[in-house]
Amino acid sequence: MEVVSVAVKSAGRGNRGYKPVSMSSKEYQAFAKAREPSRSVWTNCLRAFLAGGVICAIGQGVTEFFVAAFNMSSKDASNPTVAVMILLSVILTSLGVYDKIAQWAGAGSAVPVTGFANSMCSAAIEHRSEGLVLGVGANMFKLAGSVIVFGVVASFIVGIVYWIFGIGAWHDTSG
Image (cartoon, rainbow, N blue to C red; front, side):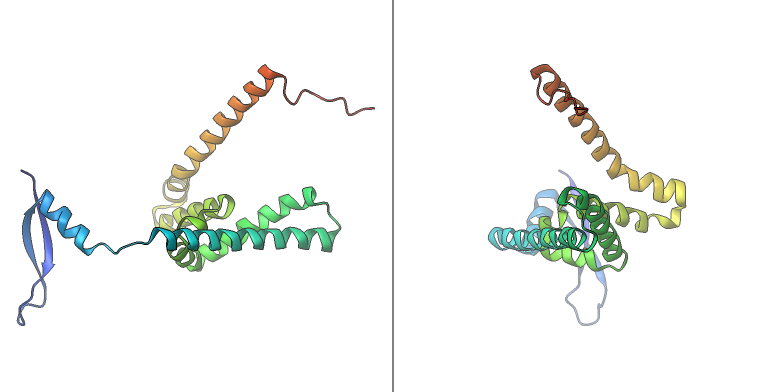
């Protein structure tokens, strides 16, 4: 039997600290589950939907700004829009705002571009005291490495499938 040691706040008036308590693994799981806050799935889904929708609406607004202000096509405006959304995400993460949004919104704040920028920036901020190379660089790319590898491998597989089935064949644009 595995014994887990935890510290609980003592109930006595004279004791203001925590006292160690030993309990089995099953007792600890029951102890932890009783104190875990309940989460409504429907509320979480609604919050994620609203937050993700607001982030996407902001992105669409940025795109429309570039189309109107700089006379770009929607396709041409997509690159600066991504850059602005990444910049906004990094600024909000640096100020501690994005984390509060993420706590409220849950998965809705993980919209691909802003969520990835937030995770990269958070890792960089958290490990900056360990140095630029071993702290920021190494820890920031723990997450990024797996995402980049997945993207490269998925792109390779999709490219092979396209090549095998002749989808997206080369087009002659000269004439």
